[in-house]
Length: 281
Image 1: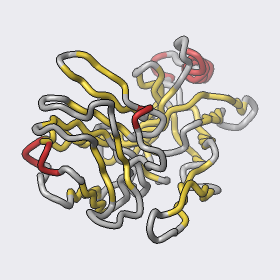
Image 2: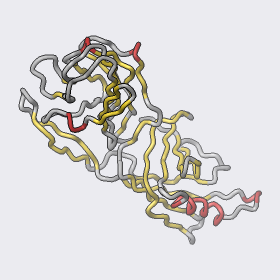
Image 3: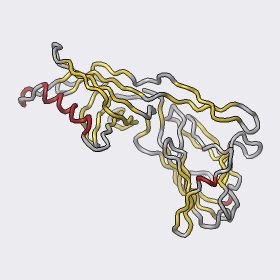
């Protein structure tokens, strides 16, 4: 992931901006060192066997990320600003709202690439340095970099035949996605799997009475936001308890991911949406 600058935000308001290129003498905060932007201690966690290959499946994850930013303070003296004024702006960001969260937003040439969300858990001030500094430690319980803007595929961009191939050339880490379909012919169940025959994994939903024409099914395998519901005649019904035992949520991997559908001709796509994901900078 290419990054040229990083912004610290609290309640959607930029608190500080750190350029990773040539710094301007007018910058109030000049970054000296950043630790914790890479992928540290990746742990594979076993979560199941392939239905036919019996291969072991692993989910790779990291412990909460701590980003440490060492900053040189650079007040605008011509405006009678002092070191304490610049430092106090960082102190205010620690808990500027009830949720208390801050964001690190990563930019490449002015375009937002990804973000990390967390809490400022430490602010250390170098009062007696020749040039006063501050060091921020931000703990991110979700250590994955998430794309700032969603990638959305509309109906015309989604093939209606098997397999459905989704290309994600930007992400470096696997991630979930959201899909919404409209049922065009009554079917007993909705199934996503890796192969049309002898699948190694599948995600199967079997609601009571099956799916009817004009039903709208929405599923999301996004991190920490998994959901599944059916909308019929304006009434929303959650179907998490209707997922067949042994099912696995569909996941997008970096590059190309193919999906097959048992009843591909019985529904049309409204959209598919996902956020890119990155292990590190």
